[in-house]
Length: 303
Image (cartoon, rainbow, N blue to C red; front, side, top):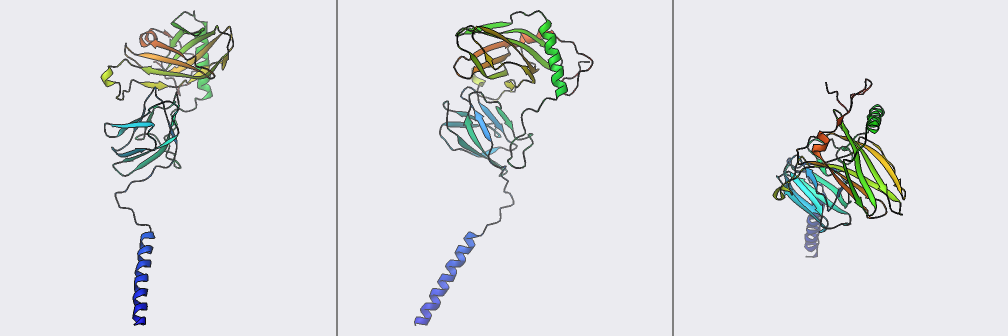
């Protein structure tokens, strides 16, 4: 009798161990399973702007690690993300598309994000992390020399007043605008008439269109943030001092109701300078002539 009990106990123990061993083994993935793009780059979002992500396939599942952020699917493969308030803590965003591919990244607040659109359909992914390719590339030295030459031509022109604004004894304005076949050239004046130094933290540019209220939550290709191809700027404007800065931006064809938005943010303070340059003013701007040594990598010939 005791021998039979021992055999039965041994059989039960063998079944339990076999079951545990089976559960511990890695099961083969189904044939339809997708892949994971990697972890984790950071998507910066702002309460003033919406960040958009476009995927190769429709989104089937998305999850935010914090309730301080909101997300919504638009048009199946398009997801927009926005924080509900400023200075929200770091969180995670997981997105799975219908082909099984998983995209995992961090989400963090930044008042002026540099990248508001991520298109996973065309951007080349980094092999280690799956990050989209950089949104801008380093401008070659020869092209920068060309932009500097064109900026010098603009400085020699008679300056005027394209627009001018004042905030807290800081006067900000655009004094000259010019274009060539591939870029827009701006001269900006900032006059610090206060007794406190003005330290520049960030200067942003965005082409925007006037849109009906009903469509403001949808993606419009006309809303486009751009980064300077070349700049000649200072980092601090001392009290009672006027500084002129030059910026070269990629050209963009806007409608008559469009405009170029310029925002200058102070590093140690809340004196934010904002201005709108109408697209009609850019369309009427001076056309700068080319010189013979112009490179063709970034600015195309108009002929």
